[in-house]
Figure 1 (tube, helix red, strand yellow):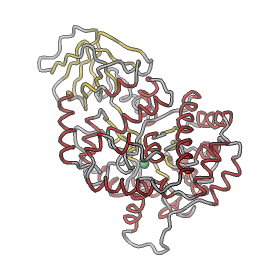
Figure 2: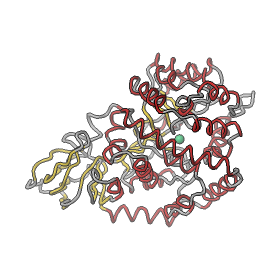
Figure 3: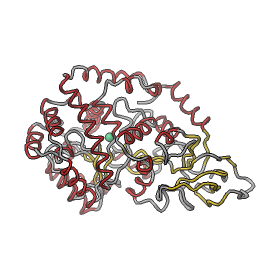
Figure 4: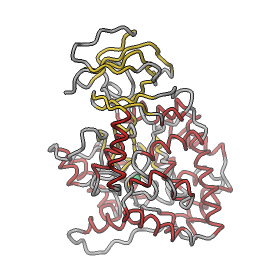
Length: 473
Ligand SMILES: [Zn+2]
């Protein structure tokens, strides 16, 4: 355990009340917040005392959609996330090997990196969920292996509904992508716990269209599915994982004319009342949204210099950059009409995010880091904060989506999600008031990870080391 730590004369941000608590000392002992008292505390003799006057203490950030585990260079990705104030992450793709390694404490996560807050088994795809029967068997299998949730990636509407029913029966949450052709309200009613990327694709916006039935029919008829060889060979899951990894760099580059057409129609026929009705279903059935706006933006506006000339690319290894540029070469061949459709669709996703937030739909901040093109681990969560702000979300809402929201989603508010006595000491110390502006969330003065103080100089040194190694995938 680290030595006790006193953050002296600081301001605690109460993320539940949305209020500032100025003039307090935060004492951290054994990795937990021991006391929060008016300034003037005499710390234990061996305590490290940090003058935090003029600073603001918030809970550590959680990236609720990332894929670092199982990649080469995972530990550098995790350390980089830690240097950006991320103290927790939800791994969105697992495997029997990763679940087994976690069970035996052999994941080898760096101590300064974020904690793993949840992990599924293998993605549900036509490989393991090609039919209702196979999908039901996979649900049971992954539940038995200790998966925290199921991640649905690419299945048919009928399979998704069967997965939701079986998952409800065995008691495991389902998160992931909506299949083309699904009625999202039905998925919500059947217990889908979290929808990623607002779909992706036409996803939710099929249901917000006055032309819904035609769009669903067209989307379902034009649905691409990953072709799976009939023979089940050993190692096939690994091969499929590789195929999926290439595709996920930018799925938009594989879009068909139908995909683009349904997006354009969904946009042109968007109806606010229908969107409010969908939101009401999400609220009633507690279906969370993890919009990963930065992920949607980097695919639909893939050639924006904001992404292709991002200074944070200094962390990314040469081979990965080549892959991203190769993907952009395919994106460059997308015709002007389709590009305009993507730009309009991204604006619609921002509007939808704001509308859902106002309607009380619970939101999670996520990035899709470690897989998605132009999405740099750690840095991307800060971009996500900015995209949420661009959508019109208040600074407190953005802060909650990465702190209190994840704790509520995970059912861990007894120990995480706010700065309060007894909670885990995973904290970010900011140089400006995060209730006044989202910009303050980027002004990381230091991080407390499992009770240990890490000043900005240490965080910058981690970033510089990773930039020198260019090891990020
Ligand atoms: Zn993902």
